[in-house]
Length: 193
Figure 1 (tube, helix red, strand yellow):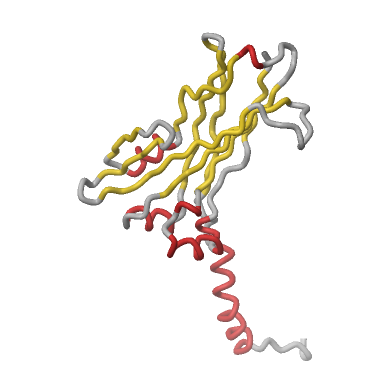
Figure 2 (cartoon, rainbow, N blue to C red):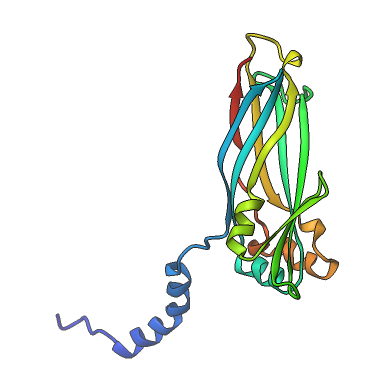
């Protein structure tokens, strides 16, 4: 049509301005996330025990810090409460399990430390260390006689990177950068004695 002329030069300039935005929006989403893959409990010898598997996928920034000697501390928050409890009612269990992973460059191993039991394991690969870090086995929850028969209880679990445990110079950046805000959603399981 005679009144419509396409300004190719203007379009070209516009395209170059949009290119960074297009690249940002089309780049794959960060694979950094924590995910509870499995949460289970079992009754044995008059006591409830918990097991969980957490898939830890750290951001590139967190992994870079780890391989450069910065230990990363993970906190696993465990809650057990009456399923129908109001928010102001007390939890039967409100525990925070803490684990630390660090890279020992001289030995070329990743060390996973259970801070509750004060035990550690060494791994030659990052992947095997992350898998071990995410395995919670035989955690004693509560004695069966403390739960009322016929009632339902909600076991909740969440994991997060403890920014407060980072070295002081890293903390301000970690508070404002999304790549350091690593945590899982709550995972829940109903226990019926």
